Amino acid sequence: MSVALLWVVTPHSEAATGNVFLVSAREGNCLVNSSRALSRDRSVPRNVVVKKGVKQKLSVSSLNAHLGNSCMRTSGLERGRKLSVLSSLVATPAKDLIMTSQQKVYEVVLKQAALVKRVGNKEDIEVKPDFVLPGSLGLLGEAYERCREVCAEYAKTFYLGTLLMTPERRKAIWAIYVWCRRTDELVDGPNASHITPTALDRWETRLEDIFIGRPFDMLDAALSDTVSKFPIDIQPFRDMIEGMRMDLQKSRYKNFDELYLYCYYVAGTVGLMSVPVMGIASESRATTESVYNAALALGIANQLTNILRDVGEDATRGRIYLPQDELAQSGLSEDDIFAGKVTDKWRHFMKKQISRARKFFDEAENGITELSSASRWPVWASLLLYRQILDEIETNDYNNFTRRAYVSKSKKILALPTAYAKSVVPPTRIPSPIVKA
Image 1: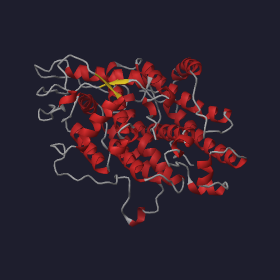
Image 2: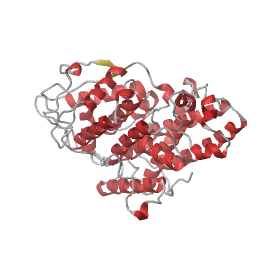
Image 3: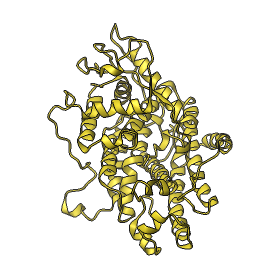
Image 4: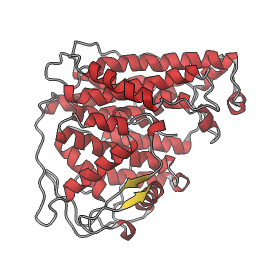
């Protein structure tokens, strides 16, 4: 199922089915970011190579074919490294085996917050300037332009909000968005049936190349430049890939603890990627950890909303992203899900699930106010629009089997001034608890 791209995506109903731009670096050229030369030995598949300065428009299926081929091919991208299938979130000491998923994830939150605090976490963070070698001038700028086009195509409302951000911050957010979208497309796109765990291992190897300044194509180059300028750690990116692995291997979740970990992998991670770019307001008195925790909460809320909206669609694919123990407590079974009949039992179950999602949205609100003022509007817009999907499910009498809850265009437009009004509210001191299910 589609992941909720947290602070860099608007509701799925807005996603276009048209074309997406992909421009690869010309074979033999060398792109350089602010501190690292981009490798010359990363050639691009011939079917996507374009001449310098010329844009090539590819369909979504073409993008996925390119991603699948680049992941599944056995080339220099895989240098004998075997990356662990399990992320570092999984505790190994015996004393940690009883930790809940929320506790494990919060440990990651603390580590990411500590990284930002070491290098500076306020909105006046010094951003390193672009630097390119003679002969490749403009290619890095073109890479960011492609990222901008993809974001404008697939996340229209959020994209408008990013235009209020500083140039360096919005470029970085576009680059992160594109990487997350490409990763999601590997297992949720037209060519998902051809993606294997080995392909995801290679995609993770390619991610490591990005973080050491050896991007494979132009879109990778934009992210490589971004992570060199902001205190962004690789772990949330690895964890998102782990979420893709879960989608290949798992179609049921015993309880909310299991589902929470999945939601973190595929959506909460984006908050951890984005906070260093969004910036925390210089006047904020909140702890860095509390802001990260709020970002995590918004990702969990968005993904839970996706799950509740897409119950019927997922069922047609044999997937049930609902806590099985809670279904049983409500007197429901898998057969009831596949039958797709709205009953009083189903309404009772859905009310509890919607209430849980709203609790995470409430926690997320606390942190948005603490962000840099120029970053708040798109985040508020995302939150308000996603929360309205829950309202639409209720309006549909909890029929998420045959009716898709979506936010109308008029409601989206009305949400923008509300989001802007909320974005001008100054920071306040906030607590930093873990949200309880």
